[in-house]
Length: 226
Image 1 (spheres, rainbow, N blue to C red):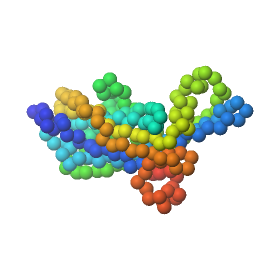
Image 2 (image 1 turned 30 degrees about the vertical axis):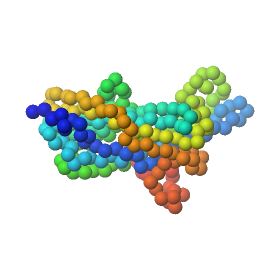
Image 3 (image 1 turned 90 degrees about the horizontal axis):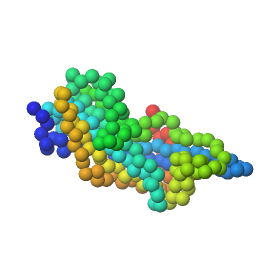
Image 4 (image 1 turned 120 degrees about the vertical axis):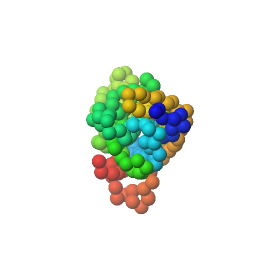
């Protein structure tokens, strides 16, 4: 028996952003451009209580993050969460599939695989959503050139230095539901399910649920251990 249409409309997971930090700094010394870009986006992932109901084995759920300033876009990235209740499907294959296959012709940048959790349980996982563990995403030195000024790093730096705020819009792209050998793709409305705004803090921009009196006690670029 296939999952009901009503079941396909229900997300198995909930994802929200409790913390985000962005910094882009540069210095010009005798015509050489020294720069550093750092960012950290954390997500709370929880499993909804109805996950795995209606005879489905596995669900891939796809999210999109759009980062932009008050003046221009910065970049988008995608994230998927795979929740598996099947005792038959190879979990190693599912884990690799989480990052391997595009959804609706959109490539996936990072993801989370959750295997064989008990039904009707709720788990919460704090994840580094961009798929990397280092705080400095890009550092270097460059001479001015047309190629450098067309590079992604340069565009991010200019966007950051001209920004008053940085925004993140989180939306849900859809689901891939697996039952046995069959799969059902469900596209969602792609409406924004969370909007966060990073405001200036020190040398960067910050959105957080951490009390202000604790911010000075942590590394805001690596707020949780990996």
